[in-house]
Length: 103
Image 1 (tube, rainbow, N blue to C red):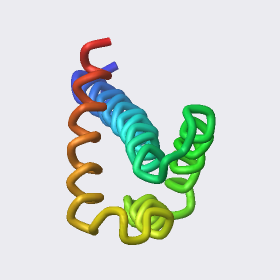
Image 2: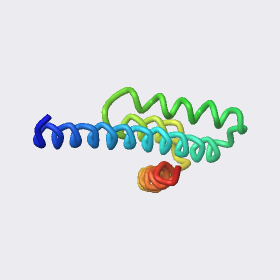
Image 3: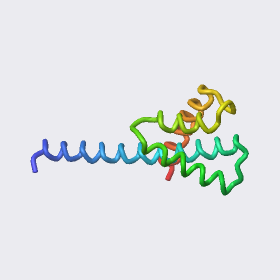
């Protein structure tokens, strides 16, 4: 294998690793976001866990974060503003990435 091929292989592996880490971080963020929203809605711990799973699944509807935002915003109604929801999304993504790196 030439050094170019080795370098290409290394870049491909790094890209795959980074994509996997981003996927895991977003899924973890969505779970935390779901638990936060469930608390605002007054759900029980069992209901909150189920709701968090729904939020994680909502992210598979389309690429990007808008599907998750729409689910949370629709379910919360006036309980949280767009700015609050988006701030929590950003906060929890950073927290999720930090948790994954610490594992």
